[in-house]
Length: 188
Image (cartoon, rainbow, N blue to C red; front, side, top):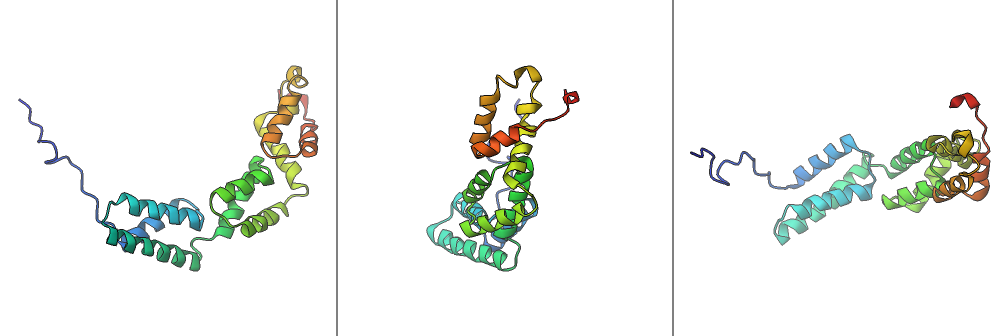
């Protein structure tokens, strides 16, 4: 004897609330509580929510207009700030060993304007004496390249290490200097 409810009649799921401008705004704020995003990313998220809601054409058009209003309001109040977003991402990526080229590419992919990217990189790079070299050295240390490899494999892997740095966006001279760093042998 099967005591399950017929399909659809008590599935236990609550139907989603209708999508409104207030619901979109609340969703944007919840997302911003968890993640720092650019205005372009937030706009794309909200548009995706509108598309997935499967509304009629009039409701979709109305909510598309509300998306622009919500994003504009959040930018105007400073909740969404592309400059702050770019600086935060650039600072974190620099610390992990990312080149300026790689950082700029990540910011462009997130919809940050070129002028904001240049200003953010300039501000973050003021913290370092030689920012590209410091980032390349952090990359070498994190990936255990060059002098961080076991001594027996360093020479055999030298070209591969240069290639890894080149693919990460570092120039040849910076890559060579980063690989010249000497560490104490008792690291191993």
